[in-house]
Length: 151
Image (cartoon, rainbow, N blue to C red; front, side):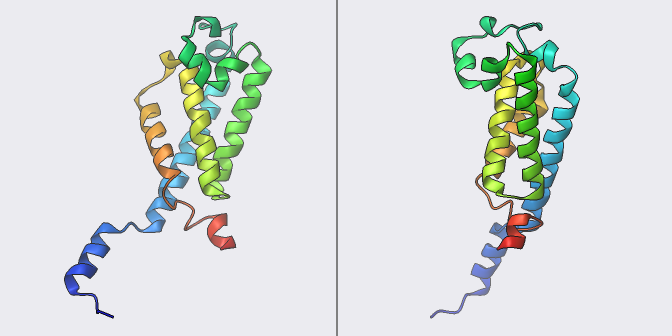
């Protein structure tokens, strides 16, 4: 067995990511998503139902196929249930409980909500889409999480 050289250990140290920073990313993203859900709760009927400014019938077919919010949009109660499920997934992500699954579900609901009415989306939504998707594939639950505690 060959001993690692100083150069190879330096490369590994520079190329590795501390799992605590990934945990901080997970917590920050989950808090951001929860704040977004709380912020949008009061305008769900206006922006995400058929009785609001953009009925689902006016959406293009691709958006209707991708967004479950578009399918649920005739009913305010259905959109509220989707927001509650989204909030529950974000809370599980915050706690680090089944982190990859809860992050994937949070990402899916966030993209679906954004696709339902792109007119109210802003640049932070694009960054959230990217970082949520990225977080589903890296070990964000390796520290400061229920997953780490159970391991």
